[in-house]
Image 1 (cartoon, rainbow over the protein chains, first blue to last red):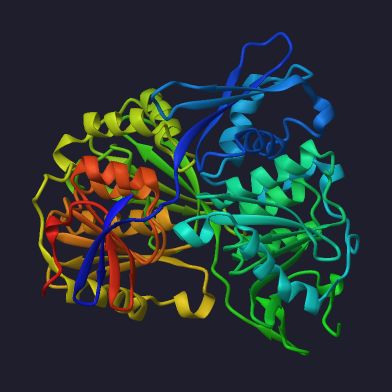
Image 2 (cartoon, chains in turn blue, green):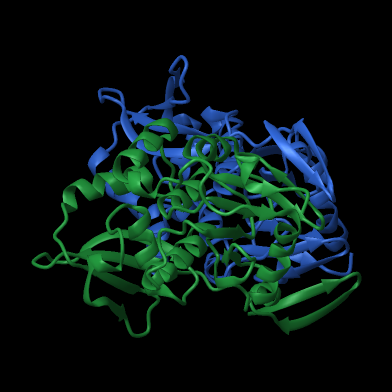
Length: 272
Length: 272
């Protein structure tokens, strides 16, 4: 992207990369159904199939890769336009009407907190993190997560405009990193990837986010069964309340040698 | 919020403020209509009426304070719950059915970029920034904006979790600052405030954002007629494309003595 860089009194015309943001329509299709448009999201192109799978998983429309037909994904790029579509082909029919309402309730537009927590527990009891389950992490492992995530990001340093989600194992090994202009999309992509790898629920995994932690991100992580959510920045009040209730450990402000544990510190070994 | 702070090997239990995130339902009501639920947004409580007004303005449901009945706002807080509602009372009836579809198209869930730009121009021609209109800003004024914004933020330094939008005049004086966990909400609140002050369109104003610039934020700023949008972080590709087309100057990475001008540099005087 051409821009005018102003450095003190000097100016320079140059071309810097910027984070790409384009709309993607996510559709779902049962065996004898026509495809139903579930959401249009502004995302950074790449790993679109994972994004669609992760999004639909978070909405409760599929539980595992077994819920997919083959081929599971139909991608459609309209020549000369930015209108791309991913259709997820489900093995079983679904109630499109019920889902439209559901989408409205749990989209990133916002959500009624308490009602939604109950709704989440109602539709996804097996995914909810069990209290005191999951790995136990040492302090020294946690403080290394941000640098590992940053090193693995393909675009962050070049555009400065992408959020990242990393999935780590209990020994701090990075399993996958996904990036997007939208932090919820980065998490959806990572979950979609793990879903295709048949590694969901993420009962023994650690999620690391590059930004802040909203209620919606805790909700998505809980749907995927992640017991520990770490982030470079702060959680919101409702994110903390939800994590506390769902049995999830939330660690924020992981910077340098320091971090804050907001919920369920029993999974953190601060002495090691 | 009680947390366990881990600093090197030492730990400390303490209570830090976190950014409050709670759902708000925004409703609109014509003279002989029952209130229609337009959106539920996760927001930081405070300036809820401004948020609702700014949001509905961005959706094209009102053009000025003249489009409101008196009293213009009815706020309802449900005792003992986080379910708050703001109803905006409009002077004229509106087509609730048409609006539901519109909401779906332009919500923060995402949007079809090209179609939406055309839609935006179709519904809001008077607000679109005229090419080469608006103030001309000096370099020295721009580099002072972030510090002024930060100094005015009431909660940022305490929670580290809030986005801010500031509205400045052409001389760099801050007219209003609004904060929220959602950056789109911070902008909606600021626009809602200016609307109540009868200062929309923002033809002679400068918007300064604490974070990144998405397409959606450019869209909201354009609806309010803002000619210059400055931000601490990066714009997305679609934000730049939209601003270029709409005639808006986008300045990103305003940090220290440096910044990047992505679109319409004719409004920036780099020598002064």
